[in-house]
Length: 57
Image (tube, rainbow, N blue to C red; front, side, top):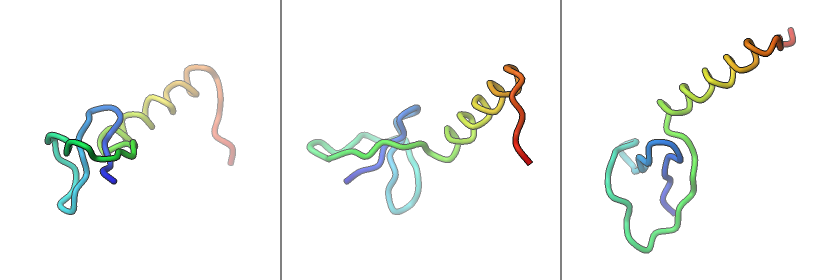
């Protein structure tokens, strides 16, 4: 099974994440590469801050 970032479509291999063509006929598992994950978490945090939600202690 090949892991692919659902945002930037980088694929993960034994060396890490890279922008490369996916293997034909491969089965995919979608997730986030580290860079897209950080960006997504910043967006989520900003959403809660803008809507007056606070983190619990």
